[in-house]
Image (cartoon, rainbow, N blue to C red; front, side):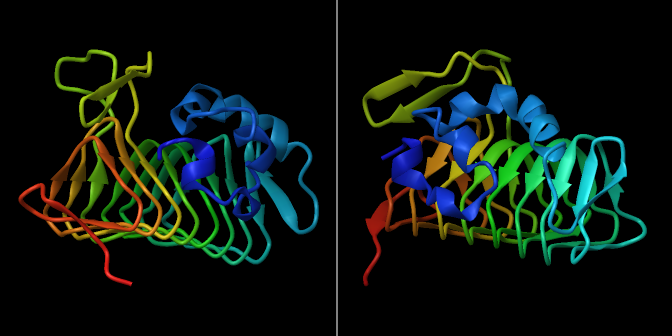
Length: 219
């Protein structure tokens, strides 16, 4: 439930070919910067290189106080609002929202992702039409600085990397002020309650409650 095929519809990102080369999504984190630089050099169809390593689609709206650090790609119809801080190595898809005081670093945001208010998203991949509520953040480094392990019940998957935020599947909803601890994986169509502290794997079509209880969503 935590492979790329389990989590994502790759038809909703310019990273389709890149991500197809991996089994687990966190394996793609180390190469995001180089991938964006290579992809940016090939972009046409309305993309402009506004400064070296920064490609923005002509239909995107970037507010004057936003900072776009290289390399990054901002897709069609996406809105980058006031005081957004894109530190670099960020691929932001079509029809996304990068909101007020949001910080992005080493990320892939699929199409229609919303990070609208005071979010930090680092070393993470957010699937199609996923949404992070106001103040929700990814924590991408463990307090002891050890390598991140993905926990799925009794199973532990060694990732071999120190910086790993969260992998959100398609149509995931993260509640306001939730903290996604290093190595969090949230399956497709799942929701996380506001103010939750989350770690490990949450199955698809589930609800993660404040107490850590996970229940199946009613359809």
